[in-house]
Length: 128
Image (cartoon, rainbow, N blue to C red; front, side, top):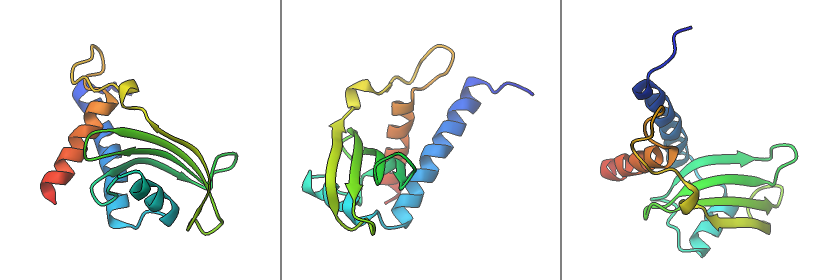
């Protein structure tokens, strides 16, 4: 199997980020997550969902990561009711921006995940 070059690897990562972001722009966020974001000053209509797990075995009702329009990465874990309409317990809501690789030049793998996510955020904002 042929190994992908750096540009191809970055293109695959951007495509995965873009798919998640588009999906959650076209489909409503679970109400509990939407409420948590709004309560913390995050506009769910401009933020993008990078990862969202729902009802996975052994995990909270919702978990994942958001990227706000201000380019802040938010990791979250929320226990919800069975219909995901209200929060039962907030396990984690943490700004993890400082832990993201936002460099566009990393030897051996090109742009970091954070840089690619910000690129997608900007693309989507420009298209709105």
